[in-house]
Amino acid sequence: MTTSVADRVNKHRTGLRASGLRPVQIWVPDTRRPGFAEECRRQSRLLQDDQLEKETLEWLREAADTDEWK
Image (cartoon, rainbow, N blue to C red):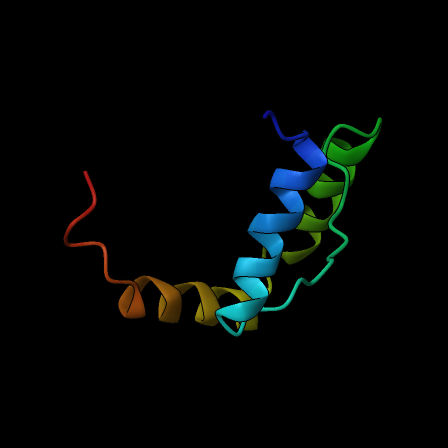
């Protein structure tokens, strides 16, 4: 007997819920949208000379664990 994709997905989700997990839906920016890259550049330029941004980036560099990166 074959099972439908919907049945397999349902079984998988039931197993995840039984493991104590729950589904969460999140919305993220659509990077394919026209103008997205331009808006990223615009916002980045606004932070170019921002002292707090520089301090935050330095802190991130110091806090990052990159020893195992290839």
